[in-house]
Length: 279
Image (cartoon, rainbow, N blue to C red; front, side):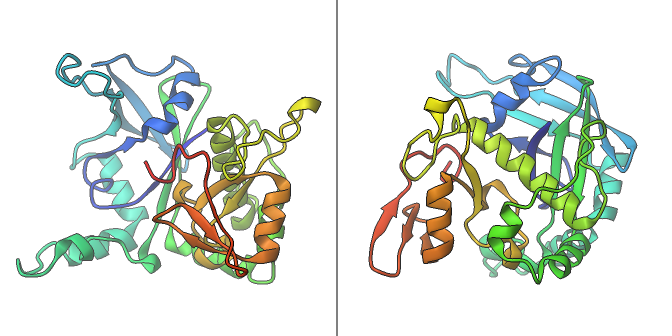
């Protein structure tokens, strides 16, 4: 089951990353459940079938001092370990970029230069398995993105978003072609967000098809995937089928600050339900 897609950055290539609280419900559903507060589990992360040692950690902070603070769940590893070496090898585009800026002069604003440019952005998609201590990591590198972009160049965005690839559930995400692998991953990301929103449209708040015991919401890329190659959760919004078609027909612009679609006729509609876009 898909868990979380992480934009590769310097921290990911050195010591680990945090799983956002809005995806903790997926951790709770995995075999063995989510680690208890303060608990650390030794886990394996599989990349291309090879297992690497890591830790699944629920940070042990003082709950009396931070009353009501959500659990802080992280995948952790040491900088010199085999997993880090493998990640730096796979995500060489990002690693070369972050290394190139680490010794910038002090008068350079690192706040902006540390942001990974779009052409270097790569992603690690983490999934759970039937084994409670084993995760699978799918690597969406710049090479994969370039190959997929070639494949989707003649496909409309709506066709991509509603494309149903073949899937072998016994092996999780199946790499038949690059496009199918990324589309299967995209669908898994969308499915996790649909669950997060209890199958409600983020724009209208409605649960379409509920009276028929049918769940029919769809995942939409805010910046078209066929342009951005971005399957990150920050680029996906859950919509009813009718609203989804309106978006593709009217082609509104997106106001990320106010979480709103701005339509060509001047109409502005804000998101009604948000649990992940502005967290």
